[in-house]
Amino acid sequence: MLRTIVVIFVMAAGCAGNAMVTPPSAPAPPPAEAAPPPAADWQITEQGAEHEIEGFADRVSVLPGERFRLRVSTTAPRFTATAFRMGATVTRVWASGEVRGEEQPPPRAAAGDMVTAAHWKPSLEVATDGWPEGAYLLRLDASSGAQRYVPITVRSASARGKVVLVNAVTTWQAYNRWGGRSLYKGPDLVFGSRSLAVSFDRPYDFNGARQFLELEKDAIQVAERSGVRLAYLTSHDLRPGILDGARAVISMGHDEYWSPEMRAVVTKARDRGTNLAFLGANAVYWRIQLKDRVLECDKVKRCLHWRDSKPESSLVGQMYDCFPAEATYIVRRPRHWIFQGTRGRRFPGMAGVETDKVSRGSPRDLEVLAESPVNCAGRRTVSHSTYYVARSGAGVFSAGTMRWVCGMAGRHCGHGVPDAAAPFTRRATTNILTRFAKGPAGRL
Image (cartoon, rainbow, N blue to C red; front, side, top):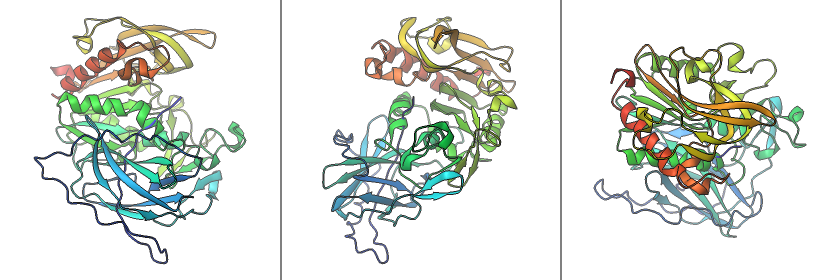
């Protein structure tokens, strides 16, 4: 029920005692007035066998010009790495030379049945000089033909005067089953053998960037094409002061796992006039502990639902209600400014696979913009899109469906979503971005 985003970079650096071929230095970045040409070949065409090639970055995000190390394991004799910036257009910013492949040791177990690959040797060191802020995917290409992504974000040093796009890396990691364990299941695929903590020191499963590609990539594209001033962060970066002066914060697709610090930072921003948009469903659901590169959530004692203490609806406007949901998205208030310039009122398949609805704790002045009847495994319910204005004047929008961003791809979203959903969601999202970029939307 998830999908992913990714950011990636690579440069070469030999490690002591590791006789690998070091690729040449990264080429000098082009001058500012000459943007890199769009890259048409960024997508993976051959995933290969499991563990044929995989890797991870030792930083979740970096500031422009900072370095990070890439740890890669492959059964192939050689590999290369190519960094792509994912945005309005996909651009290639760097490519390594050939690097000698090495099959790294198996994952190790740690406290809470957590699996980690922190003991892997560094394969490359990447310098990000000249890389624009944004979300990146690093594509690893084994000489055998197998490919995988590694995500990394080049984050913004300041959010002042900008609309902030947040990659939901805590949720990516919660669902990541690399090494056989996630916060949901263990090797026997049952809840009882799940991990009680997960580490960022390991590759992501599947193609390495599933949730980013399915739930965030298209939203970033729409945001960059809107022309508003943008900043880029991850959920891991949401610490005091990081959102000072931000015009808006955009949560994309599926943003389920929030620490108390993350929630406090975003709530404080809202209460100072920063607009919020949740372009998905099931946001702010689990109350996690985030300690550097470890996410703790036992789901029984210490990691409980936010609604058990402080309902997420007081921030988001509504709360998670249904999985699995498959329903037609139905606009209820077509004349609301968010839907200005859109066409269509009914979009099959766009309400799902998780949905939210207005619940206890929702603000009193909440507006229901869309209301979609849902059959939730035999239980009749509804899915809502909502909007409210906080006391600070900040506007808060919540799509209430995990397929809002997916809908930006039209029929390529699957699930019976029509092509008409693409211009609808893209225009509505652009309306949100452009109005939110001007300041507290409730005062406009």
